[in-house]
Length: 293
Image (cartoon, rainbow, N blue to C red; front, side):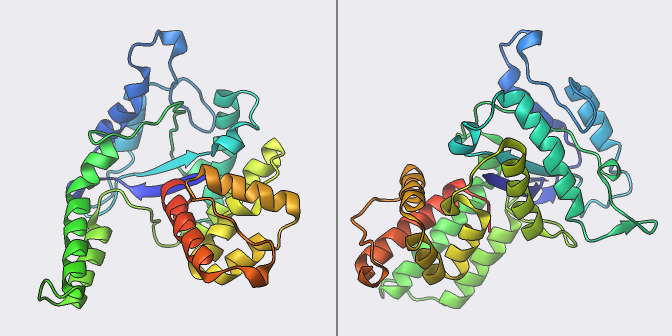
């Protein structure tokens, strides 16, 4: 499951209208007849027009300052293993979206007039995308590219300093990289007061319950957290799985781009070279195709 929550920016400032983003999401409908198009929907309605989405979202931001995000985008993209569990991709994903948005609301640590926030207190519109092919000209990639280029150059400079080919202050360069990463328009973060861990974990549980999905440890949000915060624990649990589950786990990792190597079945025999190579591969897979940590 791939999930991101991002405040929408245009260059260095927050977008003042949702119109450009709605146009971007409408791109998949180009060339289709009306009956074949994927329309916007929300908790209670289907076939909502793009015009209505722009009107409703933009009309809900009047009290916000220019320095505050006018809207957030949530991307929820099930893995191919999860998608196989669906009977009808469009209707099932709509049903799941409506359930997972309840999890989203429940993750806010706040009240309105003394009452907990409910699904009726938020305004959202969603759209099913059947194909997502990011190119250099796509919305998010294009917006982030200037930041990514600067970050790449700074990282190259750091390597030159470490190799004695350049003289500069590594600490200052690293601080600049952190600053650029925070300034990038499309990043994986959540507004204050929101329990991110709870939402991501519950999004998985909701999917599993709704579709009877048997989730392997390798594709859980907890595994991703373990890998980043405690790699030794991650590999210990991975190697300790029952034989069938372990085989499935490595199959999942292999499909995610992890280099397959001969890994001893005995934990004590896990060679450090193999460990490092596998860790590098899992790191790549997690960054490219899973929930952001």
